[in-house]
Length: 418
Image (cartoon, rainbow, N blue to C red; front, side):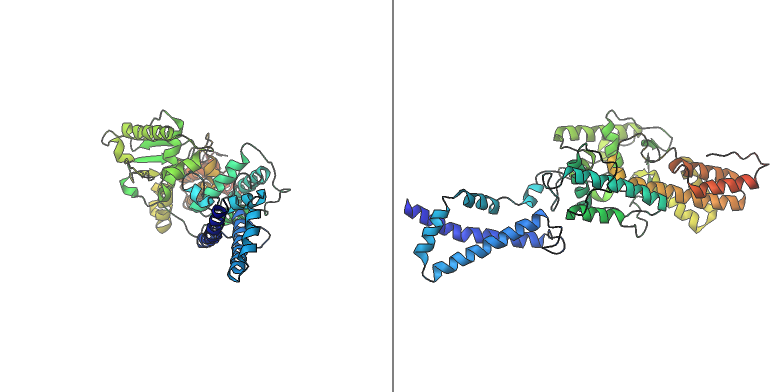
């Protein structure tokens, strides 16, 4: 029995420091240490790193004692420690699997994301309230937010899951800087869009358009609307059309569902999405719109475009030459309501998609309305002002232009669209 204990002790003296050293190198290489190691916002990864440093230091001290000839007393003390519960607790922490390994298995989790038990639900709810408030302020200030990275989107989703159904009306009294992941996502929300990012879509070759200004609908060039049996199929199509650079099953499931769903359920939704698209265009098969893959990828056909891409391209063309006003006026005439009206797409509000769409429509409406007022094209002016006030009711500059037009056209039968 003593020989077995000696062998176990010897193996542990070798395995434990090697494992701790491996974990330290892995965490540093994966950049899971945020800022200074011992700053005020220490996270779980930093705490584990400190634990491995202590384990490695203690192992080196014990090995040194054995080398200098005090092996018997050292081994005797180690054997006594194996009978203490605290030793097994420490060993379980050392040999516990890294969170980064489990994230590859569970969809929706990411490296460096705080666990539900680490992030307080009240802090998570306060963070969500702060983010939504900042999105409204960005619309008021006409400041387009930058797109969140994939890691930031996963962190956002983890915070949303942690908040569950807890609602916080104001985040003023909540300490949001106690968690480094929350601090990083709040900084990402405030990051401005450096330049207009357009989708890599061949606009001239589109067959179906996903209209986002109002309740999302999918139409062909003839105006026929695609029908989906499952509500989530339309949401999935909308998400894929807006996120072509990360069109993966895992990313879509993380964004759209608060809880993990069965693979069969998701496959049914994908199948219904393909069916709805194929029925509206008889020339194509289901696989033409979203090819079947045996990986995480779920590509969407480039013949599907969103109306914000059409509007952005039309606005760019109008800026180059005002003679190209017909396309931007047509795009504005299709604005029915605020983006995603009547839906509960929380991902669109949190990741800034709704904010960017509102700012795009208001910007286009302002430029077209100013041009139309100067040139006397009151039909284009009314279309532009109507579209702008639909996505941003009470916009002061649009209302000022409207009042200016009333003064100029009081005898022309112009009517307010406010």
